[in-house]
Image 1 (cartoon, one colour):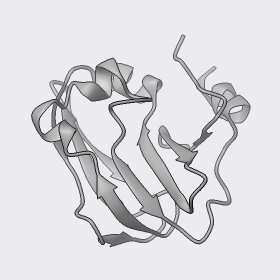
Image 2 (image 1 turned 60 degrees about the vertical axis):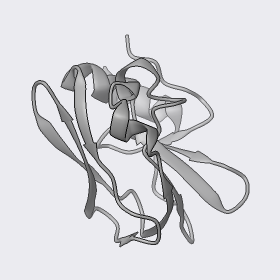
Image 3 (image 1 turned 30 degrees about the horizontal axis):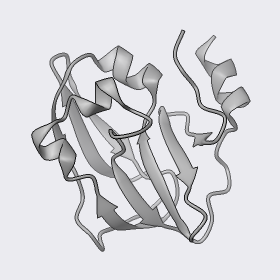
Image 4 (image 1 turned 60 degrees about the horizontal axis):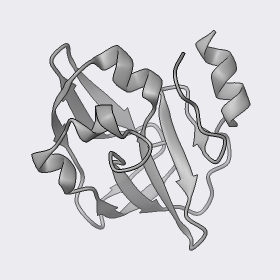
Length: 124
C-alpha cells in the first residue's frame, strides 16, 4: 500500500501539498504516483517567479515508463524549485515526501484539495 502522510493535502492527480506555515507551500508527487511511474530519469521544473493557473501543466516528470505532466493544484507563483532533482531525479522515488519535493510556491488559498483520508479512499 502507498504511503500517505497526514500532514499534507492531496490532488486527484496524485500531488501532495504541505503548508509551510509562512505563506508558502511545498509540492511533490505522491508515493502512489512515483510507484506507478517507476524509476525517474528526468524532471523539468519551472523557474523562480513563474506563475501557473489552476490545472495548468507546469512541471514534467519523466520515468523509464513515461513522461507525465504535473498540474498546478491552485493558481500559484513558484518561489523555488528543487534543483537537487536536476542531478538526482531518483529522489522522487526514494524520498518523494522529503528530499524529492518539486517546488515551493505562494498562493492566495489552497481550497479544494483532499485530506489524507479522502485521498487514501481514492486509492482503493
